[in-house]
Image (tube, rainbow, N blue to C red):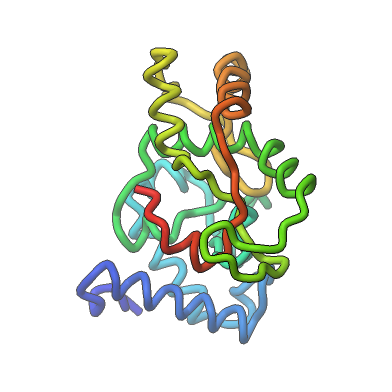
Length: 218
């Protein structure tokens, strides 16, 4: 296929890949293995993951047998690409990284692990409050909305690092099924420290999807 040589920019690669995922959803479905349904989609996804900047380390000596797409557990409107290997194991690959060539660095994995350790606080806020309006635009909220931070999460993290002189860990485990970074057992004290810090400092708010996407997280 070699379609990516015809796409001259990162944006074109991202847009094209996102459109393919939509077609897979419509023609094959979510959480459905792709190879036996459409070999062209399979070949496209195989070509896509070969663009991953950390392909050799991510795939290693395993043999890829199939792919499927699913909705992200962290963002129910976003697609995730899952690789199926010949030993029946699976892994999630960032199709964004494949299109942009940008690796997830240690700081990114650190932030993922910090978010993972405060998941229960986010869920508690969502379940214990009567949420009807977006905090930003005051629109009526349906069942699809985000819980956001009034002080940006990245700013809380930077404050936390500075206040406690944190040395960022270099290695992480992965959560089952969603493969998000989480702290290793030896870093449990760091996880608890941030849990307590977030509990004290974070101010949460409900946000509609549109407002959440408009807000800069950088």
